[in-house]
Amino acid sequence: DGGITQSPKYLFRKEGQNVTLSCEQNLNHDAMYWYRQDPGQGLRLIYYSQIVNDFQKGDIAEGYSVSREKKESFPLTVTSAQKNPTAFYLCASSDRVGYGYTFGSGTRLTVV
Amino acid sequence: AQSVTQLDSQVPVFEEAPVELRCNYSSSVSVYLFWYVQYPNQGLQLLLKYLSGSTLVKGINGFEAEFNKSQTSFHLRKPSVHISDTAEYFCAVSHRSNDYKLSFGAGTTVTVRA
Image (cartoon, rainbow over all chains, first blue to last red):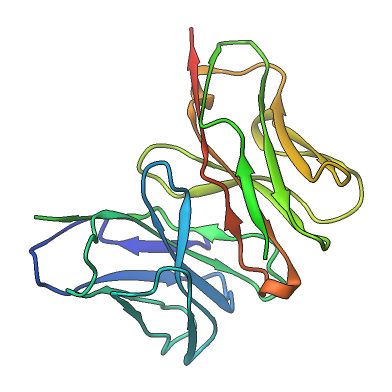
């Protein structure tokens, strides 16, 4: 079945460490997105990519980095510069027409 | 730019009662509208979407929504809820001018009680 796979489901990070969250899709979608979810704040866009080897900052890109070397993959790195990284991270994809997104099941990141 | 306001952050409701979740958006241009549902520790699942045509949209799990252009609203309804409808619901909007990126409301938590 086609879908989006995020891994790991739970991730613990020590202060000062970088961590990378994986997002893989087999839907043949051009566009991919990373959102951060905090209680009561909805979803906030971190980065998005509409085509391989190209990506743009979203509303809260500071402290994060991404790459898009393959159409199927859009990993997110949470760097040590991100001051409050504990959150639920969601990856999504869509076709270029943009008629809604397909979401992964999320990664919960906790800083310990 | 579009913004989305979900007017209720929490909606408690008894099983088999109707529920309405309110969503308003601000935009001066035509938009696409969506409702998503999120169960605890899971991703978002599309309930329904409005792209064009009939203003009454039917979705999965017995949900429906009505697009009202004059009131810039897209309220979600279900005539009779089940315990399994307990979840968080998000309204979202997109438009071509914003590369079809979705802007989400803050969410409405629905708690269904027996």
